[in-house]
Length: 219
Image (cartoon, rainbow, N blue to C red; front, side, top):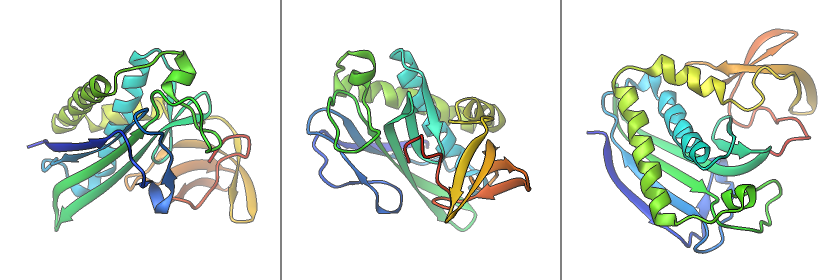
């Protein structure tokens, strides 16, 4: 079994992201929903591939709306250097079995103004409003296709596609780690989902919140 059920609301007041971050959403303007997936075929060692699949599903949805979107590791989607979507996945493992995953997604669709710096929406990017129910249904369809690809063993192909959409990949940039700054180029992610950056010290891996992206980009 791949999919369980979806819970959605058009008036989410306590949306959350990674490490307690708050998700801003104006009532009846955006998509905020959670999907329960049961990819029991997936090896827990490959659990980050589900993150890749979900991210690519959102990218494909936005691409079909005429937007050029990118994945800002590990859980954001950007359009024109601004955040348009966030993803939070909570995996449920039992020993060596992948039992279920709760996939939470916030996608800015029709909102025109934000208190959060660096946020944007589909409407702000292409000037068009969209029906939220129809949009949700379409995203589900795309996401199930990607999960089916995982079932079919296309992890390497999905990884290649994920890399092609990875924000700032192969672009020398200045990153911050604590009080220190360093120049590096994003190369990809390792098997644990850690970000790999090529630096003068070699290829280094970083976990969530260990580094900050360049100051000319929004974090």
